[in-house]
Structure formats: structure tokens, C-alpha cells
Amino acid sequence: MLEVDLCNLRLKNPTILASGILGVSRELLQRVSDSGAGAATIKSITLNPREGHHNPTIIGFEAGIMNAVGYSNAGIEEAKKEFADLSGIKIPIIASIVAEKPEEFALLAGEIDSLHQFSAIELPLSCPHTPGFGLLAGQGTPEATSAITNAVREKTRLPIFVKLSPNVPGIGELAKSAEKAGASAITAVNTLGPGMLIDINSRKPVLDFKCGGISGPALRPVAVRCVYDVYESVKIPIIGVGGILTGRDAIEMILAGATAIGIGSGIYYRGMNIFAQVCREMEMWMKKNKVKSLEEIRGQAHA
Image 1 (tube, rainbow, N blue to C red):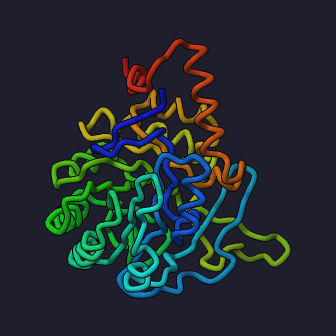
Image 2 (cartoon, helix red, strand yellow):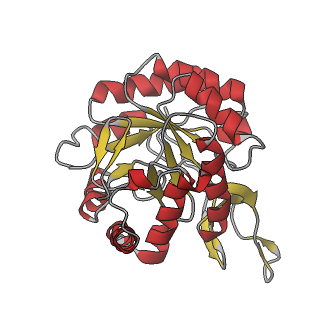
């Protein structure tokens, strides 16, 4: 009932662990698989080790979560050791890579491809709070999206998922440039913002970086609209991400046009079992509404 085909990857259900949440080790990826996810994305990797922003990097607020982690990671060489053997994990694992220039993306893609462990590569070109990367590096333009996607496509035959920002004025046009350059799917979307919260006692911004990307329920209506716009602009599949906490939220994304759905902040609200819970809730809705497969309702909101 919930099986989906995503760029020739057969997923037992459409839920995917979003990048940046838990995917830092093989053991955590195994736990995500055991918790019922259909696939998982690792935390983004850079060429060299990065300390990232200093704490505090994450804060919850009444409508969601705000974060400015800054791509802290051990770099590609340590990642190659950590993810050298993913064969025991029974779900597709997606690598996430970030860099400052197209040629650096290409180098990372070549290293990932050579491991023969990952099922796809995600390119987040949309971080709103890390200097040198994403929006702060000018990667949220059609020209940059095309150049980076082209560079990565030359280094790998793996499916490429290009992760776009909700901040851009024409996300459909951006998706078109990614599709034309060789993207296999669009991930929509990254965090919104950046936003800021100020502690009224210290009278200073809460996050060390001062501002951060907004995720969770506050992002969901924007993410749904972005998926809707991308669906009308490209033929390749869409992974809908942003504030998905329940089966109802997941069905909404499918109706907007998503093939699969990413879950990140939802783990904060419902724990690791959210993947199985969302799937059960989707199945309950489908049975109640006499829907036999997600293909029947995908993009139906456009009718």
C-alpha cells in the first residue's frame, strides 16, 4: 500500500530521514531503519573537517525549531571510514554533500560514488545560515544550481537529489534548472529564514550565530506550496520536506505532488517511532478513503 519507486529505488514506504538529523553514524542509520523509515539521509559531509557554529545551535519555540549548526562534521576521509560498509542496513542510504564551489562538489561526489555504499546523493544548495555554503554562497540561483548539478553528474551515475530553499522567489524555475542539468529528483525544501529569537533577560540573540533556519510546523504550509509549485514545473520526482509530524501531513504532501516525504524535526516531537507512526496513520486514512496506493492520489490537489 505504501511502497513507492523513487528514481528506481524501491522504498517500502515514502518516509525518509532528512539530512542533519541523526545520520552521523552507521549505528544511528541502523536505528532509523529499525524504526520503520523507508530510507535515510546522512548528515551533510564537507571535504575537510568543520567545527561548525558554537552552542547554542538549536532552540525550540512555540511554532517549530530554529537551528544554526553550521555543517559540523569530520570531513570526507572520516566519513569514508564510518560509512565503509552499509550492506547490513536494509533501506536505501542517501549521501548529503556540501561545498563552496562546483569542483569541490564534484570531488565529494566522486569519493561517495567510489564507496559503492550509497543509493543516491543529495545536494543541499539552500542553507540559510552558513557563510560559504548554500544561500550565503549564492548557490540558490539557476546558474549556480545548474553548474553544481552538472559538475556532480559528471562524477556519478547515482541519482542526484537537489535540495532547494523555500526563500527563493521562483522555486519552480530553480527546479527546472536542476532538472535540465541532470538532477534525478528535487528535495523541497530546506529550512526557512533565517529567523532570530532574542532572550529578553540577557537581551541577546539566543543562538550563537544569532540567526538560524526555521523548521517544524511553522515551515509546513510554505513547504507544501513549494512542492505544489515544483510539481507543476518539472517531471522528475519530489521529496517533500518541512514540518511533517503526522500521516495527515504526509498525505497532504503527496496530494501536492511529492513521491516521498522527509522527516527531520518530527523526531523532536514524536521520537524515533515517528516513521512507523506516520505510516500507520497514512494507511488508516487510505483505508478509510478507499485508496489502494499513493500513486492514485499523487498530485491530486492540482486537478
